Amino acid sequence: MNLVPRIARPLFWLALATAATILVGACGGSATSSNGPVTFKGTKKVGYSAPLTGQSALYGHAVSQALNLAADDINAKGGVNGYKIEMDIQDDGTTVPQAVSNTKSMILQDNVVALMGSVTSAQCLAESPIAKQNKVITIDATCNSWQLTTESDIVNPYWVSIVPNTYMEGTAAGRLAASLNVSKIFIVSPKYLFGISETNAFVAALKKANSSVQIVNDPSTWYVPFPTNPRWDSTINAIQAAKPDLVYSNIFAADQINFVKQALAVDPQFFVKYPMTTLVSVDELNTLGSQYPLGMHAYMRAPFFALQNNNPRLTDFISRYRAKYNGEYPSDWAVMDYDAFTIWAQAANAAKSFDADQVVKQIFRAPIRSRCSRTR
Image 1 (cartoon, rainbow, N blue to C red):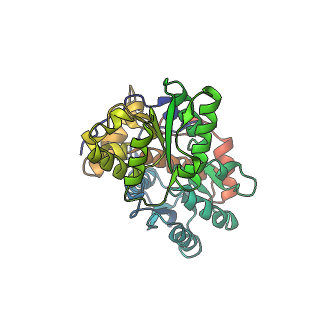
Image 2 (cartoon, rainbow, N blue to C red):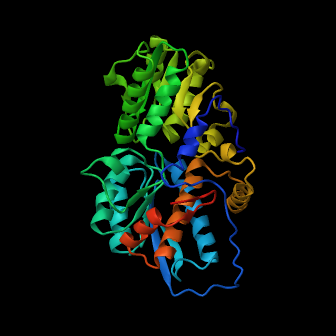
Image 3 (tube, helix red, strand yellow):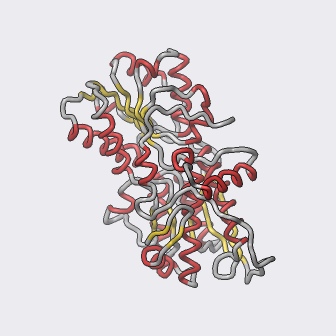
């Protein structure tokens, strides 16, 4: 399905904030080697525990495709430290136990030299200590709870995040909601680390910017089951009963798609009466197409259509991605993980080593060129 961008007011600064920690963008790059066939010393694996099934399957699909494309591009330019790079992608079904099992298997059996962060913060929270114990660097471009990089008993020196965290996103959404001249807000979020930490940031920013705004549902009703909530009847009924001016939500992937479809089935004017400010990505837009409601106050992490203007390298990336993957557009997650993988490869080459300590030093010391920019 072609992309149908039907967002009224996306927070484009937040897409740019994707680049705030380590500047990344969606700019593509040639996969053609000017030196002819490449001879490798051997093969090294990079691991990714992917939700190829389950609640976040849309995201796992996009990230896996981007990582395979990035590996092809890296290998076409000589690989990393003379080695061919191969992706080791294992399905975790969007569950924490399987993500943990995959991480152990990839480190202890497959001897991966690096990991890419999983989709959900619950998975990443469980994976991080395993990677830390084994000194395997993890480049995280999707899961983003602030605790992963700032909580003293969780922080992992081998965990590199290039994604705006839940404090940034929740604060931006709260400031936006405060500016919309609304008086009553209904909250619905996934009940796990990401949803709770981002919602707390939203509420704090909202109250700071506009203390008169009323949150109409009790905090005990803010959160819905995760990783799956197939039926949204009670939430839809509660919203209709509360009659808020705005719904704040950070539900995503299959949950957001199911919620939108079921709400529209109840009332085709549902999102006209109760507009939302919500996290969204190209994946939800593509899946819902023309069903995606107008008037949503959306925040996105790396929408290619917001970054593409006068950017021939991004245009090249989009063209190659679509050519390789049957016309699919690259989602925010594809954009970010391609760059995350590329950043790791550049740093490992600069370090002339796969040692996690040396690679981390290069990421934060040496100029790193992503598809859009250079940074330190």
